[in-house]
Length: 139
Image (cartoon, one colour):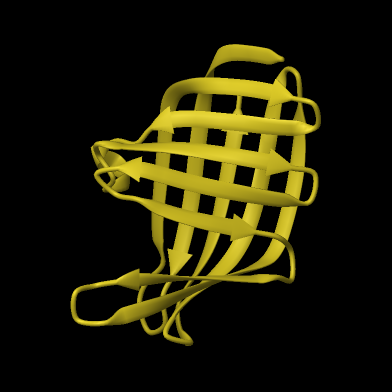
């Protein structure tokens, strides 16, 4: 198993219906691990992302990505090109269903680092909320 400290650049662009696109860029220190053909990236979110107090772990496989957040904000997103992943959240006023569909996914990682890109849509109760492009680079 390889484990090393790295710099991580997270670059995202979110487009919601009838709104201007929002862009966010974060450069932070984190951890990069390799176990077999699985890659792991972990880092602490910051006020820049609006998720201060949250830790993010990203598990990358050749054809899928799982993004796990815990702490101040908790969530789980699974990306596999062409697949829709759903989860429910109890808001106290009822269950809200979240759907994530990966439209495109590209992974280019090795023991030195690299990057991945995923383009996905988010739906809430089967209504389109946003189209997001997420680029993560490890160096």
